[in-house]
Image (cartoon, rainbow, N blue to C red; front, side):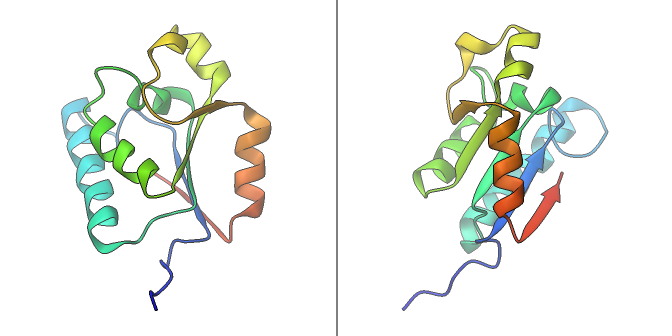
Length: 118
């Protein structure tokens, strides 16, 4: 019998091109470490929502694609804001996740027992 992840009913919001507010290289490094630790210890959220600058992390060239693909393979829903992708001209460059809209993000937040913003 497996224990349920403490984040099983959580949604993580990623609204920046990384984690924190520092040089983008450091922001990426921190988020790679964060996601790697979640994968390693099995504490996976129900969903991760990407909007504003966060959408830059799910497109070709992102250093987070490998980790995000691993999370998606383990059942984590990756929800990407279509308005933000369009704004940045990235619609055709998405490599992981499901392109949705604000209603999808709101639905994920409403169903969540916990919402974490990085």
